[in-house]
Length: 140
Image 1 (cartoon, rainbow, N blue to C red):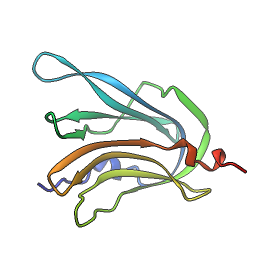
Image 2 (cartoon, rainbow, N blue to C red):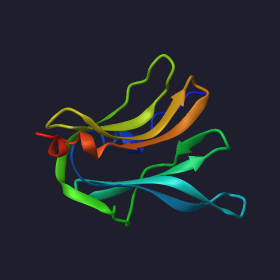
Image 3 (cartoon, rainbow, N blue to C red):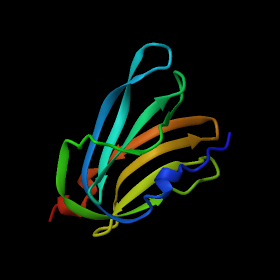
Image 4 (cartoon, rainbow, N blue to C red):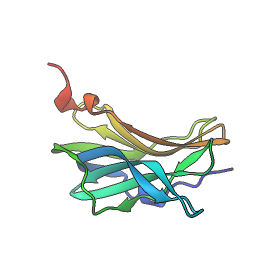
């Protein structure tokens, strides 16, 4: 199964100002009349907050739902950091659909969000926030 690149993520590629991030959960309709708690990431680029929510497909696999602009503000705000956003490259084993944010001051990856697809069989929602790698947080 080939996973097409998420056009919403592709539109975020380029240089931006990141000023807030929150890894949290959200209750969503499971499609069967129930509610399920899913992993969620909120992040603010150039003053606009985006939200991505895990979309469980079954007990073993999950994707991220479409990215969208959110009215919710992330709980953790900080002075803006200039980041380069780009799509993670695919490998011979992985068909990735992940946006990567790299701190332009030190070149470190500080955020990854999207769906990785190991061996074209196990799609997996992937949200990773690494504030310790921000240049402002480096030990001097």
